[in-house]
View: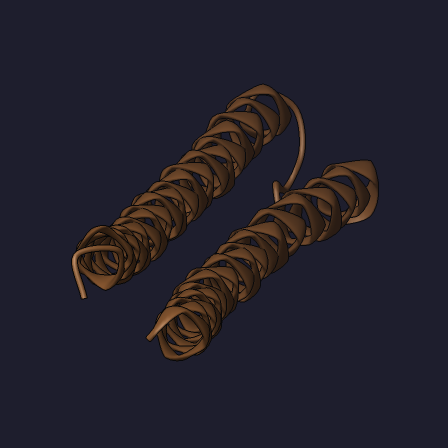
Length: 153
């Protein structure tokens, strides 16, 4: 009986170590999930920032268009009808170019938001997978500990 006491105490200690190891694995999984969640938030923030920059480019394109149209009208008013001939052609060209630039900037803003959302989703899924993996690892560690405990008792 005296010989069995150290083995039972040792097996209890091994079971406690298995429990502590499982808790550590769960803690690591939770930390990884938080890390991925923070990366997801950063991706969304970066996407919103890029979208704002593209919207600013669109606003700049419209401002440049207004300046160009004003210059064309002012120059053409000195010598001819601003709505006819080469002045009208220049205005149409400037309008087409300005509107195209604005639309490209708007499309880029939408794409930046979409890409950011997709990347954030990838990070969130990775976080969930990391946490699930930690659950599986912890269960395996507990199972091994229980098996070893059963072998020693």
